[in-house]
Amino acid sequence: MNIETQKITDFMALKPRYFDLLKSISLTRDVSQEGCSRYDIEIVLCQLEGNDQKLRINFINAFDIILNRLEGLPSLLVDIEDVSSMQLEGGKYRVVEQEERAFSFYCEDFFAELITTAE
Image (cartoon, helix red, strand yellow):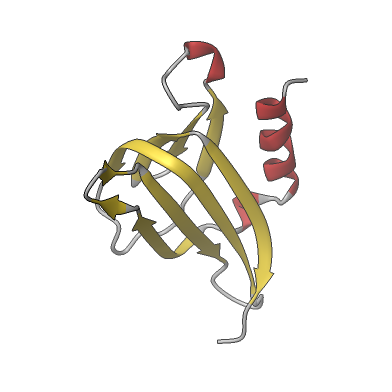
């Protein structure tokens, strides 16, 4: 199993399907006189009720970012696919929100973790 497949397997072990509501999404990048970097994207997903645990996913060096209508989304399903064999420059993963097509992009790497926050 390659590292990309292992990371996706580890992500699936966090049971992302249970975290189906978008809490927040943020995009950041470095900007300087020499130029601009690709975006880093942080997505936080939560459940509707009864759980203060959230799923935070950080995507590194994202590109070809498409954001569609985000307000009022009833349910999300974030899918991460290994595209390292496609030889996209800097793209090892394709990220797609499957239910509503709310967003999609490619990225170089990602990190996911469960976090506990008090409202």
